[in-house]
Structures are given as structure tokens and as C-alpha cells.
Image (cartoon, rainbow, N blue to C red; front, side):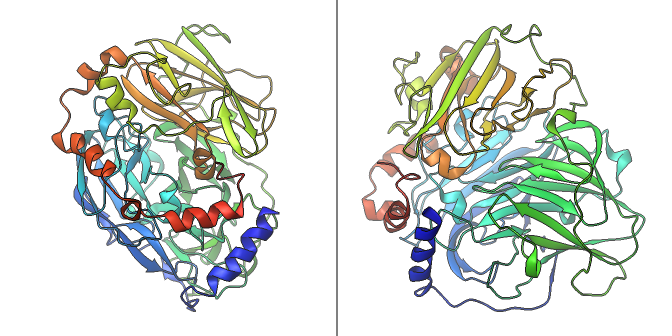
Length: 544
């Protein structure tokens, strides 16, 4: 029903949209002239683009999709001035930016989550995000954390390179040309179903033109560290490259023991580093990212990009897709450094044992019976103003307070429809003791350590552990943006009495965000029309 309604609305609105753009040929891997340092201005703008041949207004970082690669070196200090230059009233005119995977230890106010750690940045204003990523190196990304603004285009990769990477003996090339972003793309604002898959910002949609596809250029005999970034709002992908296997060496910024596979399931928010050995015959090979959508195919180059060896002709590949025989299983991934979970092994033996039950009633998600609605005052500001307990903190029932320096074991069970649900915890990585697809085995010895894990679908559960060593309010939520918007979230208020001392003096610009945002009129907030359009499609995704 929802797909049919979305199709009708799509047909009506497309009649008023800009014409479909027809192009031919293939573009090289995303031109990385849009690479910025960790000290930079990041302009948030509206712009018409046609990444799959359909032209639409978007919300972009730096005017490109994906946004510019933020390229840093381990130990760098970040100073990113986000400048709000949004002008399209059909889309949201305020914004935030979340630096996904970075712990923000001591800088919770820079985590970028609207109404949890800050108020949104109003139109024609800016906010300087300053933070360090102590001892972190790996593959990350950034995106809006204001309603569903990410889905209109505000997403980009962020990589922290380690000059002393212990895995460097496995690869020869690791630079901006080997970052590969995977994203779903929508022709309508806040639409229910994506229209295409974009690999490095390019793709094709059913019935559309033969638009450009991204090309990854390689040289025979070299080994490449490909950094995969899952930037979807909804869909997850099965990633593979015809005729090639690859070795997984990183998950979500954490090095893993090398694991040879021929396909990887990439959920929204997840990242992987894989080493590709360019050892096949010189030619063109399909890069594939099959979304979990009904009737998804690779026809006419959909859900695809091109791997091109030096010396191969400029042409579409003729390689065939074969069934995966070595798919990556999360239970086969193991942390390379300091393996093993914190605390006493055994289910229920942590200092704090949380059980979260996820349900869906009429489209509204709830955790332990509570539907998350953003508070009018950011949780961080509430804590700094004196609120210390779950009873005092808003939104009521959606804040869980945790004592400092405790081992937390969190079990999440899904009983409502929908899924699989990629779950992200801000401010931490965690050990995955039980993956959702594994119904019996608990691994306390050497589980994978990451920051996004699938909680599975109806009737499944996942179990994770982490340590409360980072005072502040941290968001735990489904990384399917439509589910988050529909209430699938909770705030972990970690060591509330210690927050003030841990974050220190906040910048005055942070204090000014809420007064500016709260003074906005509805027209200055924007996005009203697109919200109502989406609401008419399905009250299940946008409940009252």
C-alpha cells in the first residue's frame, strides 16, 4: 500500500520537477578535489543535482554529494566551522553535523545531535565544532543529525589515517581514491522508498537514463585498501566485486584480524576497510551493492559501479554476477587489539545489565514502551542546568542514567515488525557479544568491536558491552532515519554528576544556539511542505 501511495505521489510531484538529465559515459572515481583538512569551513547549501539522472533540490555539505572527504592524520585536532547557507524553504533550513564514530571524549557538546547535545544551527548562522579524536584512526563519516535531513544529501566521508598503521604491510595504496561511499537516494523529500543506489555519488534508477557510473581505477599487481562507508538512510547493501575476493581488516574504525571474504553486508552507518588484490586479468569488473529492496537487480547498471584496471578499455564490464561462497559473517570478525569484553564473562554478569524491548505499534516505535520524542531543551543543557536523574531528565522515559566506570551489558530484543535495525551508540565502541543472526552463541573471548550493529528483525536480539568512561548524554538509536524519526531511540545519560567537569567550559557560541533557534518562525524553520507530503504517504512512518 505504501509503495503504491509513494508511486502516485512521486508521479504527481515529478511532473513539477526539473527534467531528467541524460548523460552517457562513465566518470572516474569521485573527483577528490573536494578534500578538506580537519581545520576548515564546511558550508551547508541547497543545490540542484542529478546524481542518477533525476534533477532535484538537495541539502549538501560543500555543495557536493557525497560531501567533501575530511582527511585527517591520527592526533590531529579538528576545527570545523559549519556555516548554514540553506535557502530552500521546502527543506529544513536549520542543521547540525554529527561526526559519526568519533568519541567526543570531553567534548560531548560537539557531537552534533539536535536536542540531545545542542540546538540546531539556524539559517545564516554558523557553529565551530572543535574536538580531538584521541587515539582514534580509521574510517568514519559525518551527516546531519536533525530530523531526516541526512536523506536530502547531507552526508560525507571522514578518514583518520595512521602513519604507523600495523596493517599497512597488507596494502600498497590507501588514499582519497580508495574511499567508496554507498548510499540510497530519493527523488522526493522525505519519501518512503529510495529510487536508486549511489556509489561514490553516482547511480541509475529504473526507467531512467544511462547516467554516469563511478569508476575505481586500479593497477595490476597492487593491493588497495578500500574504505567502504555505509551512508544509507534506510537500505543496507550486499557489496561485492565480480571476480575478486577481499580481506576485511577494519570495522567501524576498529582494526580486525584479517578475514578473507567475497561479499559484505553493509548496514547504514557501518564502515569497513577491505584489502583488494588486483590480481585478475586486465579489464573492467562490476562493483555491486545490492540493496535490500524488493525486485532489486543489476539491470542496466543499477546498483553498480566499475572497477577498471589500467590498460582496460573505457567500456561497461561484461562480467557476470555469481553467488557468494564466502560471505562475511559478523561472528567471524575479531578485534585485533586488546580482544575480549570488559567485566566478568557470562550473560548477565556486568555491573549494569539493561534489557531494551523494541516494539512498533501503528508505525510508532517504542523502547520499553516509550516512544522517543525530542525534548525542547537539549539533554546536555538540562544536565548542566542541574537535572541529574532519569526522573528529572526529558524526554520522560527516554533517558537512562548510568553510573561512571561501570561495565554495561545491553540486550536489545525486537518484537515489532520492521528490520533488520542497525543500532548506533554515540560516544563509544562496544563489543558484540551476540549478533542478531546468532541465536545461541555468546562470545566474551574475542568479539568484534564496533559502533553500529544489527539488532535483527522480529524475534531476534543482540547483546553488547561497553564501559561508562565518557560522561555525557549519548544517543542510542536505529540508524534507519525513518525509524529514528518514528521514535526508535533512547538517551544514555552517562555519569550526569560528572558531566560538567568532564566537558569543561562550553563555547559561548553553543550557549547562543538555542535562543536563536527558539526565536525562529515556522517559515524560518522550513520543511513544512515536505513533512506534510510525506505524512500523507504513510502515517506509519510519521505518526502524530
